[in-house]
Image (cartoon, rainbow, N blue to C red; front, side, top):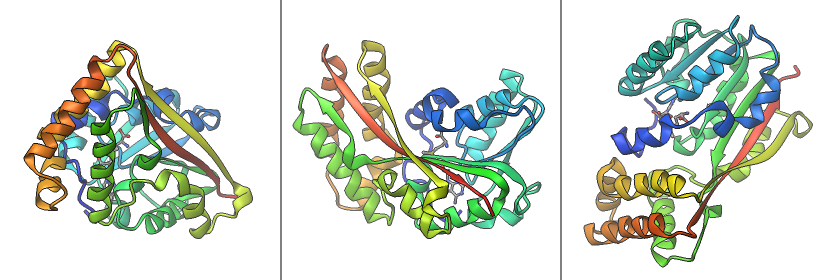
Length: 275
Ligand SMILES: C[S@@+](CC[C@H](N)C(=O)[O-])C[C@H]1O[C@@H](n2cnc3c(N)ncnc32)[C@H](O)[C@@H]1O
């Protein structure tokens, strides 16, 4: 694997990934899922809930999910089996070494999709170049990623500003861009897509109802103390155990606020491969 995934795959991390569907995580792609026999590649598929949902929407087509973590690939296979989705396959794979994955050839996919993957790569431009290589002429590359710097919340809480600052420092310290959502179009242009062939939009997640706050704030309260993020904070000298406990407490307080509101902003691009 070319870049280690900074959160690891602790249960609190996977809980956040396993809630994801096409509707809540790739609405920008929906208009392009307009034929039942599409061939789709989902890069960095994680536990595969988006991937399986994509497959269910192209019943005569096929979807391949790749991820360098065997732990999530096994979870994804089990998830698809439990859902009875047959036209999906999950393989261990790194986008930078796609030639090692059976069933991937150049210009062979109608859709190459990546959700919240580029923010975890040291070389997102190279990855975008690979996506472009793999999509057919006439197909689309669909990418969505976060801009941590643009996340927001209400009521104001200093602990959540500190969490955001710490998160951005940790990710940047590892050589990643946690704010890449705002420049996906620029990365696509640098990878060779003309600006006129790129649709750039924004998609949000808002966590505000008691259930939504319990889900999002609750999982971050846990992730802050238990996932690999914790180790990266300590080892990278971005904070102490006491700082982490303060961040976790901030999330717990936001969860309990009746008028609490947390916004996650994503940049989205659809890149049309015309030639
Ligand atoms: C934030 S998770 C997103 C998972 C999934 N796309 C989703 O939104 O639920 C990022 C995933 O990218 C994977 N990843 C990291 N480096 C990768 C690489 N070089 N090639 C493919 N996937 C990679 C990680 O293992 C991790 O599962």
